[in-house]
Image (cartoon, rainbow, N blue to C red; front, side, top):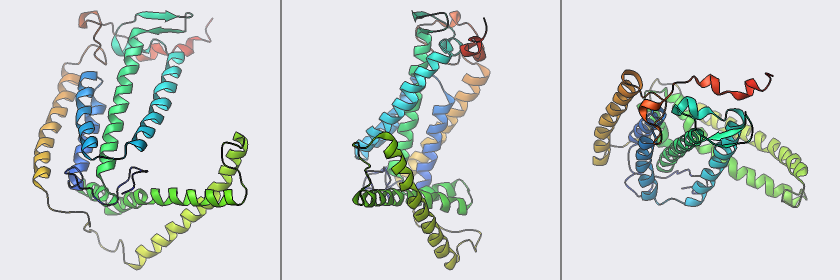
Amino acid sequence: MNNKLVINFVPGPTPVHKLAGSTKMLIFLLFTAAIIATFDIRVIAALMIVPIIAIISMRPNYKPLIVLLSVMLVTTGVIGSIMLLIVSPDTGFSHVGGSTIIWQASEKLFITRETLWYLLVTMTKRVASFLTVMMFALATTPSEFASGLAFLHMPYKVCTIVSLAYRTIPDIASKFIDIRNSMQMRGVELSKKASVGKRLKATGQLLIPLIMSSFGRVESIANAMDLRGYGRLKTRTWYAEHELTNLDKILRIAAIFFGAAILFYIVYFRIINPYPAEMWCPFIAKEDIIAKSQFEDIFFLKWFNK
């Protein structure tokens, strides 16, 4: 188990870890589809409960999870929100159906209550997606990942490639650390004492041996697979496959109802009887919603018009 990289090579002791790879893949796909299908924060918040409970039950190392979540929030949340407010400050109008200015610096630079709500909903959507991915990554070994893809009738060669890529990540990270330490022992400064330019240059030099060693590892794996006759037969079994447990059977039955609910939500609430706006907003009544094209919000196109 590699807690630093959120990758498990041995199934853990919890009931979530012991689920079949196909069951984990099925749950992951259903939750991903449900999160993509809705912009209703009430539905998204409800969907987040299961990943949170599953992650807590697996008792993981929370430090890398917090680091990954922080990076995601800063890059896609803070920076993305600032860029959106600059380029399209009234984007909430087209998604929510209303516009209430709460701060304004100029005609083209202002903040509306609806845009802030849109940013909150999209951020909640990203966090829900992150939790779903982490739930799947923490519970699934590379072999279970491959067996889950095989359950979806993916070609077994593709499954093997995904499994090998999944397993190679810790090896590349370990090799990176070894090369970095060897360069530092030879006098190359990679710490914060050096300037940013020198560190970037040294990192570029570090990547060359890392890439070359990775290519050598790929060649070794390919030769070993060829010597063992890999790809000669049309089908194959998976080492991680095991009989379904009682929890697997219960979750698969629940997945059928969950999938039906997702399909009903998409057909009825997105096609037959859609909400007047793209997302529900608590401070705008349904009858007060104003329809507007999303392309009208791109204010930077108007910056060149005098």
